Image (cartoon, rainbow, N blue to C red; front, side, top):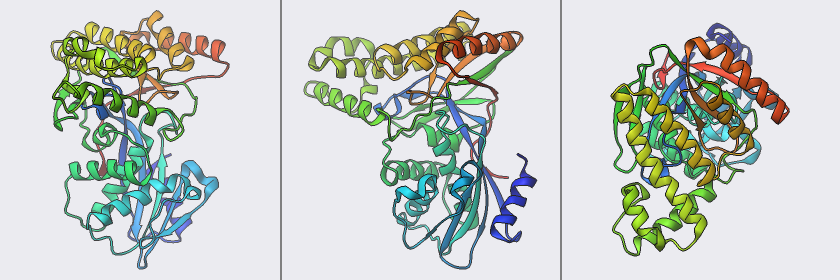
Amino acid sequence: MNLENLIRDFSEVFKTDEGIHVFFAPGRVNLIGEHTDYNGGHVFPCAINFGTYAIARKREDSKVKVISKNFEELGVIEFNINDLVYREEDNWANYPKGIIKTFKDARYNIDSGLEILFFGNIPNGAGLSSSASIELATSIALKSLFNLNLLMIEMVELSQKSENQFNGVKCGIMDQFACGMGRKDHAILLDTNKMRYEYVPIKLDGISIVIANTNKHRDLMDSKYNERRSECENALRALQEKLEIFSLGDLSEEEFEENKHLIKNEIERKRAKHAVYENQRTIKAVRALTEGDIEKFGRLMNESHISLRDDYEVTGIELDTLVEAAWRNGAIGSRMTGAGFGGCTVSLVRNDEIESFIEKIGEEYERRIGYKADFYIVSIGDGARRI
């Protein structure tokens, strides 16, 4: 799907080719640091070369009309900038609608409607942040079309607020941060507790990032994502009876081990253990990467998946099958990425082994699960932007 075709499709749907602008926001893959962003820990995501295109123009009235090439059967969904409420029947359109409302609530002047055609080449429900990508594509379109004076970091924060409050998903900041703030050939070490970040060059000499999609659809609203977050909040409260901490990310492994008895609920203790150890694992992994020790980075990726499987319990047979097959077939490191319960794995694979890697893992997955996985070789790109 090229841009000329998308612009032509926009013109056919909305009966005009005047005042059209094109925007893009990437998806993201998290290399390590999972379920730590809402626990005040570190994450290490990067923007990828898959994402969401938004073809947009302003209207003269207050109507907003949106259509997605990914949900063409739903047709054009229409709402009004003066009536921005969540409606289940509006489906995916609640994401751009939520962004418009959140911007207006923040006193940004959106004084007319608009038309937007979206197209995403991120597989829906794959856990590569298609929702955050839509949010940032909408944000950058609003900034440009309405000449809004706000920084990318502000759009990131408003996008997270929209998903939390308008769409009811208690996501952390990582997805929107990576989609908005991404930089080509760099990952971002983000301390979600202090909102400090640094760009880390990713030099994968002769190695590629391979994404494997389980093709098991998962929806954050329907998953146990919010339940995991509540379990961690309960564990934190138990620890705060003795410790002066603001988040699980404040703890070292040693401090956790000394005080874990304060968490009486065994399940909540396991959830907290993952959050604490994963945070420290992420710091160690980035240090290994900057020192050129890609093998150690890979081992820490593997440990991350084991913790997500055993302590956080968010993997499932599909993700475990892909990861364990990757471990047996030459991956330097492999783990689930995203919220879990389906979605994708991320693996580091030597370029000369990619073809056999995909073939062997694909065969094993289909034999065991009964349907195919999809594979993508991704590169690391820039964040949301006008094209």
